[in-house]
Amino acid sequence: MRVLIAEDHHVLARTIATGLRREAMAVDVASSGDMAERQCLLNDYDVIILDRDLPVLSGDEVCRRLGELRDPPRILMLTAAGLPEDKVYGLDHLGADDYLTKPFEFSELVARVRALSRRVTALPVAPLRHKGIEMDRSCHEVLVHGRAVELTAKEFAVLEFLLETRGEPVTHRELLDRVWDENLDSRTSAVRATVSRLRTKIGGSGVISTDTGTGYRLC
Image (cartoon, rainbow, N blue to C red; front, side, top):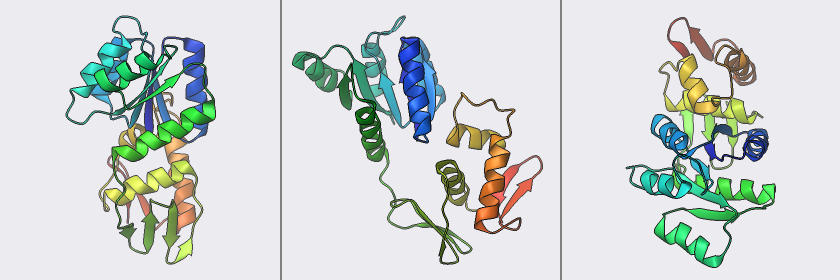
């Protein structure tokens, strides 16, 4: 899941981002409305946590503009404006999908983000399969030749992406964009290390190949 936090209170934004990353979400942060809009046009986000009171471009205007996109992300408004009429305006007139007032419990925020993400794309009934590897995304289960394999959230997401491409190569940059976020330096070894651990868990060197110049693919 990839999330954008549009919040100009830097400490709060950093705290939320750190907490969501611990929940295995990829998180980007925007400190102004125009930055949030620009990032949404460049990246595909499942959920946006949007403060209504943003500089340059208000959160209300960002919400309106994103609602005009052909495939808009889900929007969770996070704001101190907690009167019933504020909530009605945000949900009915601005087009937000959910509304949470400050202060809030972090566990509730996580639950709401996950609930919104489930609405974005219905998970397919059929599992993903490739040469003895079977993934059931609805219950987060992976079988390799009938044997259950325990994967971390990042390993699961990498394998999911590789299964979706059906043996076609996936570049280092594509994995960064899909599974991690802009907080990760592209020069780090995180992708290679995750692929290496995943390769070991699902069958060794003959399962995932590393093609110089093209990326990673399932053999």
